[in-house]
Length: 145
Image (tube, rainbow, N blue to C red; front, side):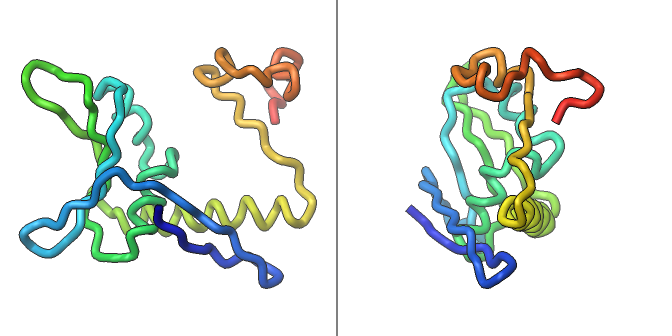
């Protein structure tokens, strides 16, 4: 388990912990972070579009605290005879920095008293056991939180 802290306002910090499945050292000395998934490759690619929307890989790359050239999901669902990956390579440092900034901004707002945003992604809400808690079924579509 890797742990690092994101500095916040008022001398607060946000502790980020992650269990990275695999870290490879490439021939050029750069690192590759891999996370095994049982999802299909198409689903994994959707998670990475737009880059940084899903925070798992950028945070894993940041947690390594080294020269990470690539962070990828590795699909364990066999497509033919080989396993396939979907990853972040282009501008990985920029995606990591934007992810850290977004999390710091969100948690700073929460500490200042802003309400916790409800994301309401249709794929997640359909299976969520807490649906009644956020009252998703009663949101007005144009002004959903």
